[in-house]
Length: 134
Image 1 (cartoon, rainbow, N blue to C red):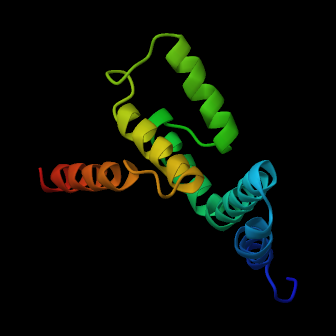
Image 2: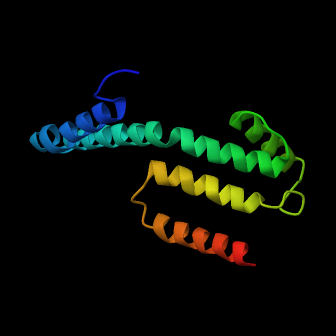
């Protein structure tokens, strides 16, 4: 393990520098590109921070859905093959839940301030509670 600062902290510091100090000194296209670069660094930071948990959750959902274990990439290839062969929710109960959960997790990393993410997450949580209580 390396000492501090951690990679996420370095990325946050460079993004902050671009956004708060360098960007405001630039004009037009250069300022825009500084904001784009800062946003890209923020995205990489979120991916590093959340990747292991998101991958583990996706892998667990895929394994349960497909009835087998493997790497997340391998399970996704198997899911794609089954979908191409015509399988759907009837053949794979929980398919739509998996697709929703996977999509929402990716949006939460890519666009955490996306206006529809909070309501979508709330709807998903409510549906999960309903299924548990049913």
